[in-house]
Image (tube, rainbow, N blue to C red; front, side, top):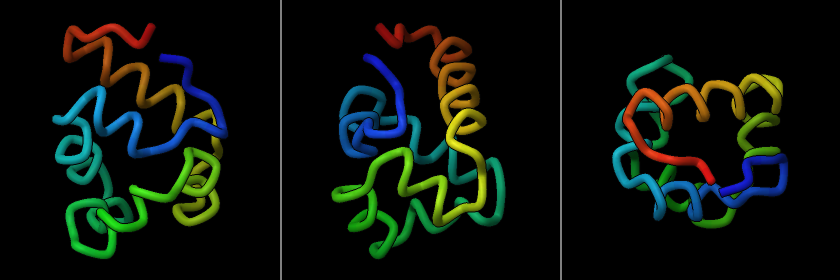
Length: 77
């Protein structure tokens, strides 16, 4: 999977179902991902949207997602 600013968060969550719980545990600002509102946002948001909402740069989000995917032993291709 190509990760870029336009990648839908739901696409990532579908490919790596474990990733929402993992990301939510990384920082208090990301705990919203596990709430009802967070799940609704994930359905219609991209990595770029997550960047704007969280204050993290897009590049940092992509870098961290790739690290998590690699650490989990999954492929991001």
